[in-house]
Length: 165
Image (cartoon, rainbow, N blue to C red):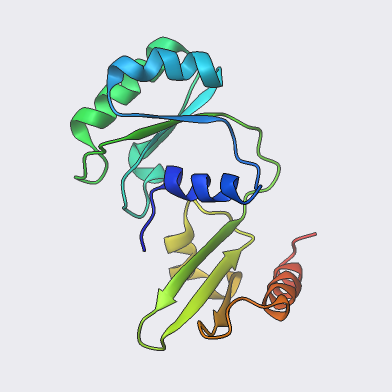
């Protein structure tokens, strides 16, 4: 299952995980209403399923309505890495103390879930995986038994070993 960021955040909210205030838009005419709702500064995020979205210009911090409109218009017209978004998430900008990376994926060959985590943040995770694979924690989860407490403890200990306090 591949989720857009806004879809993943809807799942988080459903389970009580706090996420920044955000509005999903489908055209440039919706930018003002979204900015009125989330405030400035804000983050404009193209909803495309490509790696390296941030480095490719698909995630931008904006400080004015004019800037938000210009960036949103460009993203809808040009896309990110050749993929045009049908939706853009405009989200409240929040100060970042420490950026982490966490994902759950499927290893089809082994028929198991894989939890990937890193203390290195998520913007350059593909580059980190290539240059510094020891900075990424990998936990295998049997789909028949599901996620267990010991998986989370193991994840916590391994992240601590990487310097997370």
